[in-house]
Image (tube, rainbow, N blue to C red; front, side):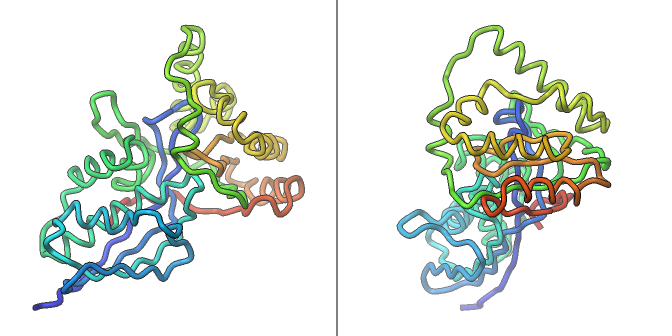
Length: 287
């Protein structure tokens, strides 16, 4: 059997960004990298810093099988640098990288639209899927189309990764299924302010977007420390801070020249409770 080798990678992503629940996300330059070759049976070796919990399903394997079928076994090596269970889209990236590497290994072109739809179906929501496949700042329309937005370069990005984990299934359970009209109107206003702020660089509009009531308020009750991290970031001079996806990581935006100062302020306030990452925006998604 010809052992054709192939590679692919997909970036981390921060979804929701506050009021953009399940429809807004940004890709971050922290990657899950997959190497694949044809084999006699399915094998996955994890060599990266972050590996799936014992007994859990393997998203890279699931993604690869969904792309080429279980009847085409591959041997795959996974170098994942995305923290798992931290709200940084690790499963979406693993699905996408697995799919792309598997398709290339079978000498099939990667259909990025198809990868997006497959990842969104496996995830159960499209925001992380859109960011990890296409890169940059993305908005998923009500009909499922993906729109790339231009993130203003005025802002610097920090990601606060706590020492504890919070898996998506647990975090989504606390979000209510219905909301009163006043809450919905407030959320729509925040979403509009957020998009304007992110694309134009207006920090005053980002301030108007703070304090989501659709998912953040209930998740703050589930894990109050995340709210403390957000407060610490804002207190240190950040222009915006929000739950990253289902948490518990926090996405922080700063004025580009103040990123170091804000990071020092957060570290002083929160100490060893969080690791502060400084990923750039991943302009490309799956590569």
